[in-house]
Length: 222
Image (cartoon, rainbow, N blue to C red; front, side, top):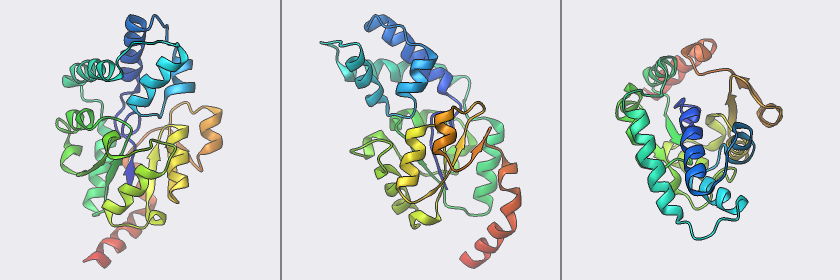
């Protein structure tokens, strides 16, 4: 099983929107609305978000790496005292780990951000495979990250289920030949159209109906 990170495993999209809105207001003189963020930036890597913003605003002379460094500092400050991985999500990951389901994260986030959150969550001890922005040449919706995740898991793509929260993520998972479930409490029409299935949130109850199959698979693996 593969989890997207921002907005899926980690309930931090409000944090990211706040950070990018502040950065764009301070450095690009651009007011970023939630609708603009959801329509143009959600689901893309951090670097792609900054590059897209610079292109949209026709801003020149700004250092992408400097803006990313500022974003990283603010993100780590905001998640330090309030871990964004929710308790229901922790219980789902723990249940999957108990059944020895291979687990990975495939994300457009920077690796340091992922580990900053995982380091203070029980999930960090259960998911060792992380494919981050630095590990791929092409971000979602390109399937590269998902295919890399499947290879590291030692699973054929067709045996992998992905949880995603964005249209680019869903399209990337499906392009990799994987099954995909979108996670969104208020999914957009575009997400509904792209995703084979949608659930409002992650919780252990999502796997209740397949626990017998998970137990059988666990026994076959010895």
